Structure formats: structure tokens, C-alpha cells
Length: 623
Image (tube, rainbow, N blue to C red; front, side):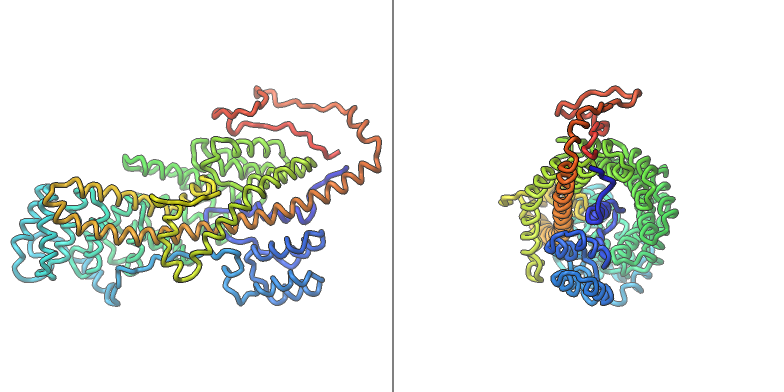
């Protein structure tokens, strides 16, 4: 049998799989044209598969494209599905599971229209420990509390400041009281309740303490990795009112906010304002690379990513910060590789994939995508070797890459090993169809407005202390979802809140009995709010993964159809060439390998120092 490449339907499956190789930006659905759909129809792909492919693509069809399908004789069900997805609809409505966009919200912060003016005034004021914010005699107890804080006695200071707040006799001094209460709690490493009191100061931007409380909130956001409180106010503060110590951080957050709203031009300008000595500089430059790529400015994108990789930055002696910078540099390499892959320069793409460190958490992903680069160059044994590493037990709990199985099936298809393809696809269906059903059922529970109010329960379903769910979803899926930086930051913050409650209980009895209930009330209220936000983000990520699996299951059906068709042609060819088997038996196969490597046969055991170096010697059956 002569096998010179994949058919149009199989090429469509390959293109859809390749769409997974994209920059680290919100996933886009695969847009279909009339020609793409008719290619599937004309190659005999079952009608139900074509309909599902159209449905899961999320494409918005114009009236001309629908007319094209009608004129070219597309099945009625396919035309009807395309009509249901015309451009008048919301882009997300065509997806089988809606992916919700999570907004920051402002449930506890109602900012008045004059906020901007007051913020400018507050930023221009000098901080003093003497006269406070208002005329008149400062309460002696407040002076004593500040003195206790300055003497590094945070328990005594915080208790006196709390009693002043409880008395509600000094509203004009509340910004100062809250500010020093935040400082005292921060000294006690009670970061969330400190943040709460700094927020009370930020709500009063006309106060002279505004310009000092805001940098403190930035510091805590860096510590926790959770910036949702800052995002709630950053857009309300005019940039010329930013305190100097927080200016770069706030420009970065403005950029993220604009990017999330798809305002790429404005986001790029904000990221460009981040100073080179800021801890957020590399992140800002990375975002600029992503934005350039989305704008089609590929040279500028590569330049930004190279700058991220090459930039030498001073990192605080903090393990988390060091790890964050190292990861960002590896992501920069990964994205350069993806850009070269996107313009079909597969050899250069492979070079950059190979630069990703084996110690990087993104190495398995890079290895899978390197497999694609080799597949596109017909280096099929290299592809199989790279996929063997990805499939190893070293990554079974950490890496969620269901696409790897389909790439493996496509590789064996190109080698005409149809029985292996069939087995891989059956295993794929048995593994991922139940997982997809669970994901759809889970997300569907929270689709309504009432359901979204219970998003904290969605979080507890899989992550709560008393979770009781019989799940078929693998651990690797949850690890993949928790790589979402925003979600990871909230999770880290929730864990710190648990630690804070333990700290409260360990303090002296009078302090714990007096301030404890007040602080626990703050923690409990915000814990529910954070869990709801984490639940919404979790549901959004779960919906995205559900849609991806639905698309992969459809592609698997297309490949299986192609296998049946290829086997039919193969059997027909062999029946017409009865002497083929005897001729093949006389063929000498050469399994020679490169002389500069020592090769050991694989015995089914994985060794860490061998990962990434596996190489197949498949000759294939395409005779």
C-alpha cells in the first residue's frame, strides 16, 4: 500500500490539535470555514461528528457561509447547527459549556465619584505622627498606641487601637487608627487582617495615610500572590496619585486589568510604564510579548520574550520569588518556540523547545510540543520517543496533556500501524469520555445566576476539608487548573488565613479573648468571599478543559473513521497483490542508530536520567 500523507479530514484533526500550541493567553476556539466543513462532509465523516465539530468550534458564521453550506449540499443538521451559531450570537454561546469571565467585583468597596480627586490630594500629603488627619486634640490613647507600636510592642498597640475603633468616638482619626492597627497586625504576621485595615484607609483617599497604606497593600499582595483587592481599587486611582513606592506595581495591575478586558493597546502602554527595577518588570515584559503576538507583531514578540530570558534581575532572597523568575524565563523560551512553530519554521521551533530546562515545570509541555514539531518534519520516531517521556509515571499526577494520546495515534497512523491507532483511540475514549461527563455535569450545576452565588460550594466539592465526591477526574487535571496564577494566589491566601487563625489562638489570653472574635469575623467573611471567587475561577477553568476534551473526543472519532477507511484500502490493495507478503519477508530492515549515542533497549522501566532521550525504531507498515 502506498501512503503519502493524511486525508483532508485527518489533516483537519491535526490542525485542530496543533491549535493547542499557542501562547499563554486565553484559549480561542478553532474557527471553521465553509470549505473546512465541506471537506469533512465530502470525505464521509459521519454527520453526527460533523455537527459536533461545528458546535464545539465556537465559530460565528456569517449568512454567506451558511448560504455556502446550503449551496454545496451540506446535511440539513449541519446547516441548522451553523444557523444557530450566526454572528448575532454571543461568541461563548456556541460552546457546549459556557466559560464564565470572572470579574473582580467590589462587594465591600463602593468608591464615590470624587475618589480620584481625593486620591490626588491624599497622595500629596506628608505623613506625620503628630497632629493626625483632623484639627483638634488627638486622643492621648492614640498617641500611646503609636508609641507602643514604635517600641515594637504590637500586641499592646493593636489592643489599644482596637478599643479606639470600638468606641466609635473619633471618626476623624479612623484613617490613622486603621493604618497603625494594620502596621501592628502586620508585625504579628497577621497579613490578611492587616490588609483589611489598610483597605479601610484606602477607602479614605483624602487622608494623609492613603499614600502609605496603598504600598502596604502592594507588599501584602506580593507576599500572598493574590492581588484581587488591589484590582478592585487600582482603576479608580489616577496614575499621578500613585505613591512613588507603589507606582510600578500599580501600573502592572492596570495593565493586567486592561489585558483581561481585551484592551491590548492600553495594556501594552501600562506594562511599558513598569520600571526595570520593579519585581513586576519581567512579568510586564512577558505580557508585552504576548500582546505583540496577538497583534501579529511577531518580531517584537520574540524580542520581548528574549529580553525576559536574558534579563538579569536582582531577586529578593526569597525561594518563591527566585522560582517565579526562573519559571518566567522558561515560559519565555516556550513561547518563542511556539511563535516559530506557528510560522512553520519547525526546525527553529525545535531548537527553542530543546532549550527548556528539564527541571522546569513546563518541560513536559515543551516536550509534547517538540513532538509536534518533529511530527510536522516527519521525524516520527523522535515524536514517539518524546511522547513516551510525557506518558511516564514521573508525570502521571502532574501533567494533564490529553492531546498527547491523539498525537501518538496520528503518528502511528502515518506509520500505517492501524491496529495500534485503534487501541490508542479506544483507550482514549474509555478514559476521557467519563471525565468529560463529570466535568459537564459539575459545571452545569452552577450555570444559573443562583448557582453562581454558591460558587464557594463548587470550590469545596473538590478542595474542601470534608469533600465527599466520587470522582473519575485525575489529579493531573486539578494540578493543571491550579496553575492559573490568579487561582493559585487565592489558594495561597486562603492557606495563610488558616495560619492566621492559629496565630490568633496562640496569643495572650486577654488579647485573644478581646480581639480574637473581631479578627475571626473578618477572616470568616473574607474567606467565604475568596472561596466564592476561587469557585468561579475554578468553574471557568473546568469549563475550558471540558470544552477541550469535547473537541479532542470529536477529533478521535474523525481519526477512527480515517483508520477504518485506510484499513479498507489496505485490505483491497493486499487482495490485489497476493505476492506482497512473500516479497516483504525478503526485505532486510536496518535498525542502525547514531554512532555518537549508546543505545539501550527499553524494558518498560523509566529512569529519570533517561527522560527525554527515548528514541523509537518503528519502520511502519507503509509498503
